[in-house]
Length: 59
Image 1 (tube, rainbow, N blue to C red):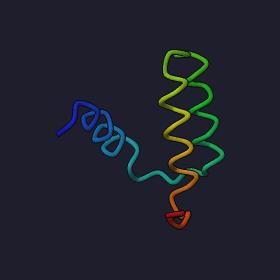
Image 2: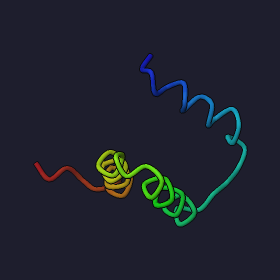
Image 3: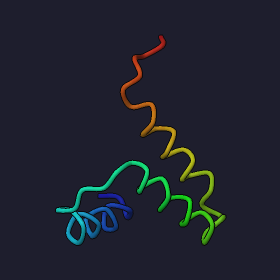
């Protein structure tokens, strides 16, 4: 288990029953980066990964 899994598990435990839009999630990510600019690159990578999940492999 990665250290970050604890945060993911807490998110699931506390908010797992909620439904949110991707627009809501994007706004929360923007707020997080505004408060924690040192995490700009990892948040950008996560957002890009999520945005491209359904893309077919380009190999």
